[in-house]
Image 1: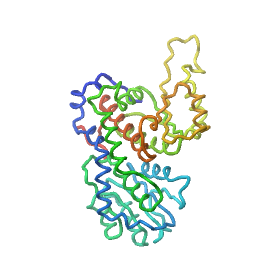
Image 2 (image 1 turned 90 degrees about the vertical axis):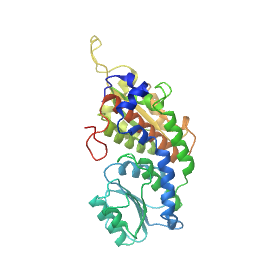
Image 3 (image 1 turned 60 degrees about the horizontal axis):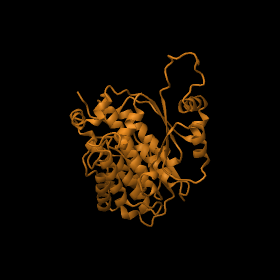
Image 4 (image 1 turned 180 degrees about the vertical axis):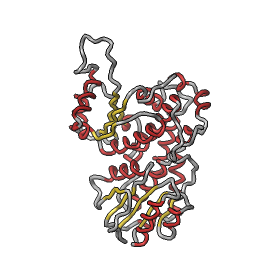
Length: 363
């Protein structure tokens, strides 16, 4: 839960600019530019060499930071129709071979564990798509073996979600496993950044509005489809990076199995606490905020129908009702909205930044 000491700051562009001393909002808003720059870098690195290749398996390597959310999102976009096995892992398995494709991302040029994994994949002849700085042990391990996509847009560590996602999407498109319009993706991210600009007040700014809904609450980010659930992973990451909010992230069918929490969510969204003393008028209200996330539109989806009936007061974030585009585009736009909402919430609460490797220090 992150409390806003003064929520009026969100609608004061001058004060926002003053507290955003590291230009974090501007960095997040460059997502569209990251997509275009990554596409250019991938073309220069000859990602087209994957065209026509029929892999035995695709290994999505997750390292600390953005890797887990990006990998799970790519997997969700491919499933259930992907014709080859998908493996999401934190290191390249020892069965890797020349018929496999390895996809990885890191902001840390010196990450030893990833360098060892990339070296292993190269040693056994696997195809590698790596998004990483072009100097350091990770890049050295990939030298001559990988499609190395180096960043061309400078953003702080932890702000490269669009870059990492674009690299994975381009690899999947080259392999013939996924259709994605990269130009449209970049354009829609630009439009979302404009909608969420600090100059726009909260009642017309989706990211500020989302930040206000999350403030003073514990978010339950429950996906109504696998793609939305994967975006929820990124939402939890950016909220934990920039705010003190603790989230629960799950697909809605999994959330229903968490019986005590689901029961509390039902009470929170129905406007009543089933365990509360009806004569205790001073009892605190619940701090839970249920956000149902949707990317795919599945007519007659039983999970969505059950959620609507059981959680009548939940907030529904169905991005397809606001944005036109393919599934990767819709997912990326929703991810950017959460990233900017987390930044607005963190800047207003004084928690954005920090001394960790994925955020600048405010000291």
